Length: 337
Picture 1: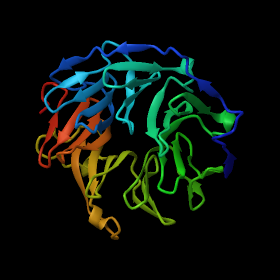
Picture 2: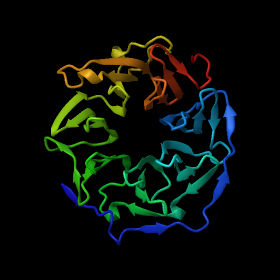
Picture 3: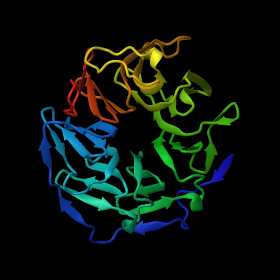
């Protein structure tokens, strides 16, 4: 099924920013622990700082201590964080729109400034330097104004979970409904054997140009017209490391659990989440090598490979670091290592 979706139509909502937009000096709070609530996204900036989007704020880790950047500015829950090509940071919140951080001050953008929705679950920068914000529709920011896309402009559904632009220039929009591909002229439902990929939560393009999708239909790879399914279990996040290994956060039965040293043991519930690593050298084998690296009763969300090779991942109770042998938690709660 194809939809009319034009990113340059004059009839679409385009909002110029007011000349004076509210800025506030960042009132940072340095603490010894990391977030204690739900962590949704983790990145590392060009200076080596690790940034964490959590329900109790935006945290920066400099290798020694954590700093809550937003603690005294807003109590909103944060879902997404992006460092743009100019080195500035963008923080997406639930209810308070998006915050722009230049290293000194925070600048807020909400629906009053032209943002399509104050719930921002995903942020993406395209090849032209435009910043996209997704959740209750799509907003594209060119540095001066917002252009919004909702069901009124041809977007089939407003709930956008993930956005990427692939090497060919096509845009992929993963939503709470179907997954769509936009080639610059038309928006097409992405299907496999005639069936759409529904409720995709995460989508990436690997270094070889393959598209990976994770969500309610499991983990899939799309390569040159060929589809490969790795698991049918729910996948919440996909990440490719520097060696080409694919890491996922996946729901699985407890009977499959095998916690590693430093983690808090096997969960007690029937369902749990695990951090899996698919070996990059065997991804095209009939039975690719996959290893469970950590298990947790709580949902595992964002994943990051830091510059030192360690793997950071978020859960519903904070952030953890895996150094290749043990897992260390940073939420400061009793029993966490």
